[in-house]
Length: 464
Image (cartoon, rainbow, N blue to C red):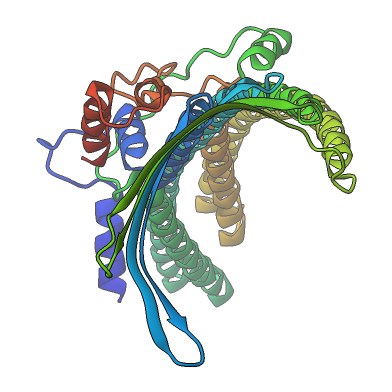
């Protein structure tokens, strides 16, 4: 088990042939974008929303249908039970109905579907941001844990040397057995910390696989951070314009406004045009001549609900309440976006300050460790003093590594809070999902036509 763990750590640490090319953060982001099941799911949901536009558009067109019937009619004279007539009948009815005017209900329904599509597109952008942020977090965590493992390994080697030195000094009577025991305990603790760090690295590898789609190979160092603006106010102005959650809320408010107008129009009459062609025939088994008829009907209709038990009024009130809820939700979303951006910006400042502080701490701890170690050789310090000084130096180095990784991730967190953590803004240079491609193919509700064939090609491409 221990050998397997070491082998996994060797791979995780990137001990590969020199000729192997290191995987960059851009490579990981591209793989994460292409392999994300969550993005694929939301892209399919967007296509479903696109079809809602086609369904709404179809309501503007005539509905043409047919009904075919056939049957055998038999008459008997009771109580004798004598068959008096027997005939085979058939009919074919072709009908067409078209809504001429319903105070804009149908057209507003199309607008509702379109706004819903735009809202769903923003949901896809939100998911894209989360996918890419998870990749950045996983990448930075792998590098951090590799550095922590290396730090722990160095600590084990150093304490091993301290233990050897303690044994040598004990042999010549310079120190007591207690000092040796202290070094032995420190070495055991250091090995336990190394095992924990190796476990954390394996956990980070699993998170990386989930985010990217494969285990990490040899990872290149983190590239320079993207630009996020000079001030919080500048970043906030961008966030309020571009954040997908805010844009989605704006489209949902428009949907709610349209639903109010639709519910008002539903209280008014609807005018329609109807046409019907009926062909029927009857063939008697007693030899009478076939009786075939053709009937055509064309007419206008007006429909209005006079009394529906209060349903229409309730629908209207519900639409008004939904409108108020969506507007309040939009305001809350804007407040949450502002808060998240402020928190991320403050966190970035904390990590920058922490890096600066730990740099000074490391320099001081290194000086202290060197001094204590030198004094210990002269007998002025104990083994415990040396180990304590070394532990302080180790803790300072680990804190700096964690602060550096957190600072880097915080930059991308700010970018996401601004609504800019997308493949396009990061200039990954890969083909991304085109939400307009499928929409343009279905928005006019094609059936069998050149548009339909084009749609088949798009579906085939998506499937591949």
